[in-house]
Image (tube, rainbow, N blue to C red; front, top):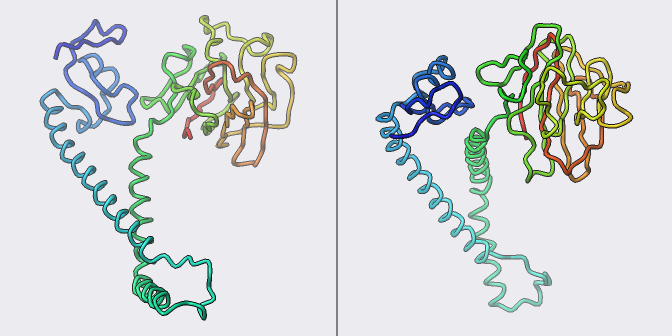
Length: 308
């Protein structure tokens, strides 16, 4: 393989293998420096050299074949059910059976008899299909990229755990961190859920991505009302561009609270829900610009739980 690493300070090291851990933000090709910096705590089962990658591909190719075979089985089942729906259709408009001809009565009674035989299998089949669907959906859900904090779009005093799911700071300085994926341009409604693990001061919400300051030490949401943020904080204040910036409200945060931030482009608003206290707060925002979930914190820890 003639590919080389493109991470800063890795000196274009030669790619020696791959990481296959779905929870790792650095999964994919890796060099020796990647291995030391990003993957040192991984189980070896996720780390493959190029020979291991070849073997893994061969094994997973068989799995892919089984997946296609499963699809064919379901298509055959669907074909049989389609035929039965047509064959045993008793959705008659006229139910005055006294006026039926002998041939129509024979046709109807045959359908009813066959449906009587089928009746005993319907509930078990329905339960089986629901279980199969639930299993397939759970596998599909595992393939969804989990929301993480960004190691690049944060202030220097914010530290992330190796999975990027927890942001922490222990000093008195204000810090901020954005989430990696941002708000999908194609999605009209998205939700982001956070849990407060430790708190001195925290603010949660969204920011216009192009207004993330290049000088991260001079980011001000109190005096500068053009910061591009829509936030609520643990002291019961709201921050937004314009005259209402840094104003009081009743929505407050505390340790162990679980907060969902719902971004709705169709309604042009963002909604905060405190799942522990059943509190709600809503704010309108400019939908014409690219936005990202954001957390500001001081001497606090926060965990990003999910994205839907």
